[in-house]
Image 1: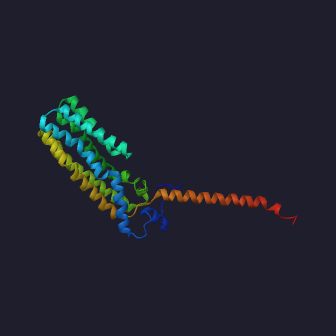
Image 2: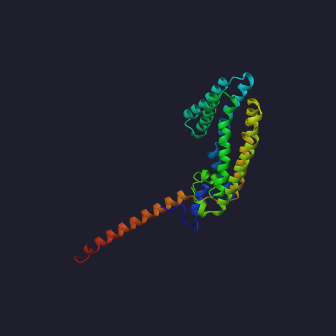
Length: 269
């Protein structure tokens, strides 16, 4: 099999077709946009993923704003998260976004119940956001930007961009910086509110900051990747090399057969 870090000196038209989905009618720019949009949609869940991320927290803060009942608010948020998982199970859809929502809500519920402070429902998610921001920045400084580790397998390039596609590595670095700084700015707003605001105020600000920063980060990622070199489809390369190896093995077997049959085919004619 081809090493994912093996240098590529020339990519064939067949490889390019595999990368862009084989649509000869699409221009390179249109193909890049289409591939990038599909990958980002798969990675971040699209509109449905946003709903599954926002709805439990929205339900929690709505109920708590009305009746100040921590237990009812927490049970409602956890219940709707589980319902979203059940809906995905029934429809046999991917569960990663719904499950991540359930785990996030469950941690918040457990933490708030343990401390008796309703604001602590939001604290695990806030700490996760801070940790994610730091991860984006640290991995970029280390030369392995996190967004590339997330999107590489979805683009079928795995981690070949690290050594074989420097333009794409640079784009992943810019995107990871964008994610890290946007999430840090979000934390800079939320953590002071955790100490100074009440539960309802913190909850509504957090809900307001759920989608806009996320969409900004996704949009910037799209901008950087559309302008970057196309991904190298390492799966197609490995399949092509395996096919070539099978052809070579078949040729060697035929050669051995012909060599073994050679002496017997002479002499008695």
